[in-house]
Image 1 (cartoon, rainbow, N blue to C red):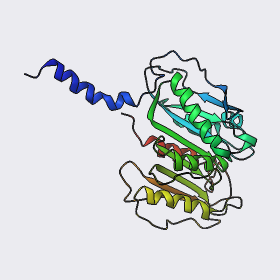
Image 2 (image 1 turned 180 degrees about the vertical axis):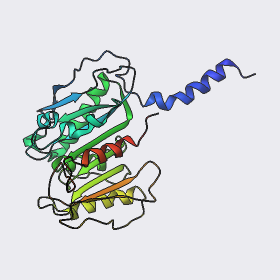
Image 3 (image 1 turned 90 degrees about the horizontal axis):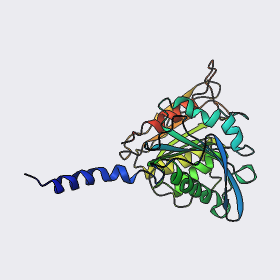
Length: 283
């Protein structure tokens, strides 16, 4: 008969990956409150971010951590309130019916994400460290999304923090916040309007193709809707490494965080982003 010490060791070994993914904030009574704004000093600059977590927050349950970055000229307050063209927190908490996520909305310097000297990546790292020391986070399930400049910031995270984040959703972006590294796989959702007059779609195709390659997907030129069609076309790439899908949505429209198909009153962007993020099941 197997000794109890051996059995317990085997059980502990089996549990180790799950326990390792839980942040140090698990089991603690939180000092952060929701929704509320907090400040950090990054390279001598005062930076702000908002935190949102469920009213029935459970300090023993590891939650997803989801960053929502605003566009150029926008603010975190607009993302939180759902003003200035945004849905609240990009519409994701409304779809998160299981209350699986904790949401972060940071403020960019000069209302953008130029990431000078890596300041914005340093802010992201510092927010993660601070929040995960206070709240219970599943460290295998960090996500980032944003529109325009916020998409550029999410792309920068995909390039330099692919080992720290599970997936990104890049909404009508460009390489605006840099791309340090950019050789590791990460689950990647890209979305862009075929008639975008601010950030042309060609740049976002190139960004997408970097992760098509990194993720081992089969290269292709996915179909895109004709201007004036009032539709969007979703392509899910084949051949990708297990756990590293790439999804591309091209829509008939210009530069907007809330693209809508003809005759529809609500955007498909939030639903597609949430569907992409929520496919990754927590253990």
